[in-house]
Structures are given as structure tokens and as C-alpha cells.
Length: 216
Image 1: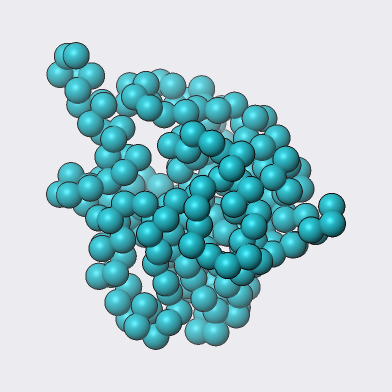
Image 2: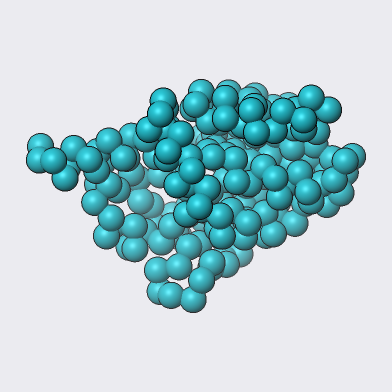
């Protein structure tokens, strides 16, 4: 493996599971690069004051602040993250919100969420599903914790655009958007509406779905 491939493979590992000093650098990069997409996901989820919401795979934590702002002092935000480095960073940056109980951060992933059934009014996840092998199981788990009528927003890069980046050849699962929509529907979410963050052909996708009733 050449130098370029080794670098790309290392970057892919850090994007999937940031750790150590390199992970902290990746977190800053993610916060900058993902800001527009994550804020778009928050807007699409449309959390209301007093609600309980979550960011699954929050990474550098750029989505936690706007979620806290949207639900206000009577609301509650959960952040779920697999990487200890990202959890530690969030605990430092959001010490006050953790202390007053408005925010909780949990170690976990999309296939095993440490949350109660029907406990969320809305949830977002951005740039995470590339690293999930069993996406059907993950979406079923999200459907378990989101209340009927609640929103779930999945943010993903355009698959064709992402294939242009060398690091995505190392462990990224770049599923067609239609496949992701079908998996959401099969898990119990109403057919997702599609939004784009940007005007180019390769613009980021936001899939906005609503949890169907338990009897549907």
C-alpha cells in the first residue's frame, strides 16, 4: 500500500471512529465541514420547545448546540456516540448543560441505542450510515425510540460525489439514496421526503421521515 493509500485508509478509520489526538483534529474538521449539513438536519427535524430529541453519532458535537437551542430550557437532548474521544470532548464543551440535565451523552451506536422505547420526538444522524453494516437493524432501532409521529432525519453525502474521494474506498458503504429510503420505509417510517443542502448535482441529501403509528 502506497503513502496515499495509507493516508486515505487512516483518514477513513478516523472518520468512522475518531480517537486520540488525530481524532480530535478530525472532530474539528468535521465540525467545520459538516456544519451546514447538520444545521440543515436540525431545521428539517423541526424540534420544538420542551421536546426530547437526539443526535446519533454526533461526532464533533456541532449538532448538539442547535438542538439545545431549539428545545429550550424545558427540553432534553441526547447525544449518542461510539467514539470515546468524541464523548470526552462533548463532556468538556457542554459541562453546564450536562450538569443541569438538559443534555445527556451516551456511549452507543445506531444498532443498540441506550434509550427507552418511544422516548424521542425527533432525531437526526448525519454522515454515519456509511459505517453501519446492518442498516435495516439500525433503522428498526431508531424506530423503537422515536415516538409515532416523530421525525427522523438522515443526512448523507451524494453517493456518486463521495466516490470521487479516495478515502471512501476504505470501508465506506455508499448506498444508493433509493435504497436508504426503502430501508427507512421497511423500518416503519413514512416515505422520506428528500431535501438537498446546496444546488449542485452532488449536493448533500437530507431524508426526512416520520415515524408511522405502531399499528401501521
